[in-house]
Length: 502
Image 1 (spheres, helix red, strand yellow):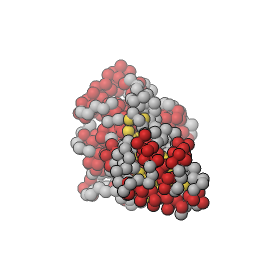
Image 2 (cartoon, one colour; image 1 turned 90 degrees about the vertical axis):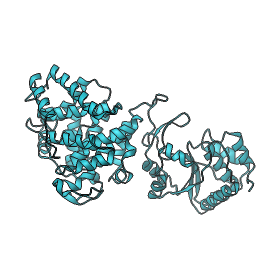
Image 3 (tube, rainbow, N blue to C red; image 1 turned 135 degrees about the horizontal axis):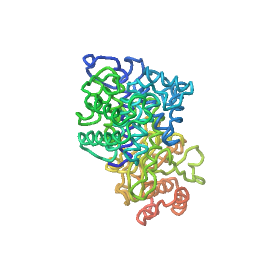
Image 4 (cartoon, rainbow, N blue to C red; image 1 turned 120 degrees about the vertical axis):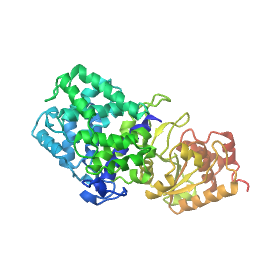
């Protein structure tokens, strides 16, 4: 599994678990039957609304990506959530825990960030937001990671129990991110490594367990905790979430199990969902849950920035995301044709939403919704897609037939074998003739293949031929619009021989 799949899966896994669990919060386990994507419930929020769990997690992610590890910046972004609704869908702030609320008040009163969390604060507020630490700072050694996890914890929760929970969770996340698959072994090794760190240094600046002996006693009590009620105490949240994850076979089963513990359902599902999304990858999160998140552009920008921190194994360059490389349509010059009389347009692009590490295409990890939105921003009404079905599978764009229409872009398919010319010349010409008619009526058309070069270039040139341009002129205009297009001799010959035989 590629690293972007794990990174994206962790963030969206957390948010979807949170949003799925919001309507069920405060219910007892025996009051929860079927778990479904819904709204209403405890907080009266629409479907797809994440709570403080997701918002504060995103705040920490933004802070780490922007400022590195800086607890002053972390505190500032947490206050921006509370005061301005930052990172919250619709800007709505709700479900603030008592300990978190007290810590935010202390921060507003200029308490040093790492002293804001009360020493007796054993709620789950720090654990619900700590996930990004190991994702962004994934190359740290154990001792440094534990140190930063406990420091980030103290911004809202100063108890030794909360610090141990954040440290253990961070170590687990890093091991799953590295691809370890034995969940029992991951938990055991994370606990052993945390024990070694605490034995050497205790919990510095802790108000109750600075000494190694006290820190180890806290860890022993944490590991021995037996309650699994989905409650709001950090140790209960941790073990309820871990059990939900460890006993499941996929992402959906994990979050459903977490919610069925009852009580603090959104937090338990968020913590477990982050682990499950990381473990099984983003593609295992049901599309209707992930795409159903409200204001999905808020996390998507941060997810793209997170993915861009990874240099691909192919050529050492960062992954090309929809944020880093917005989808561009290269429009052709239509002057001298009757197409120019209308406001229509025709251009070329590559497969929207493609996710692949390939020799020809380079490292792409794009968001299909973002690419579809960029098509509409460029006025595209219709996309003619030339790739075969297996390409959609391999390049992870199987939802394109649903996503493009949702953004106002009609999808037309005419699959062509890569590097070859159309086998059914009559059907191909009929398709292009229909597009020419739409352009004459003011339509704006984009033509796409996997890379937007050979098949797209040939098809664009044939479209110009259908609009009565000569072969040389059509080829020159395609080359002028998009570099490196239409280079294969058989495809160039196909353009010159237009119209095709039956």
